[in-house]
Image 1 (cartoon, rainbow, N blue to C red):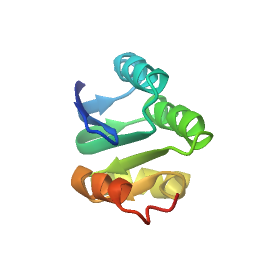
Image 2: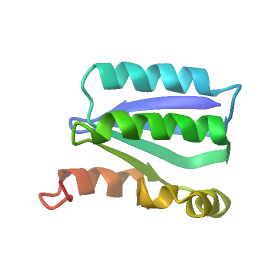
Image 3: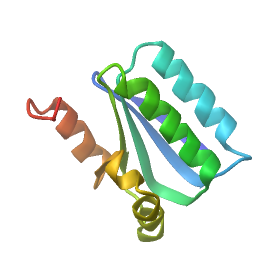
Image 4: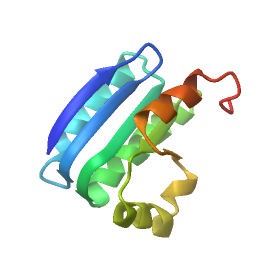
Length: 117
């Protein structure tokens, strides 16, 4: 897994490339927890280059959601490939996380005055 963090005034984008599974989630989890501890309220997970995700990767998303939802924040997922989108649909996670076409759309929805908050 390759991980890139991009800070914006309203969110942190995590661009993930490769596989997000039990062997690669520790780094992402540590970085997400650091951002949450620093008060970030919007996380955008850019999966446009993600090839695979399993329950260990999904667990990080759920943990982030639980921590952010209680303080009015959001986890947004963008750029998912069709077969990963199918995982989100089957599991119902597409109803929990805000799904966007790309990171630009996610950032735009955060900055929009009618972003549902």
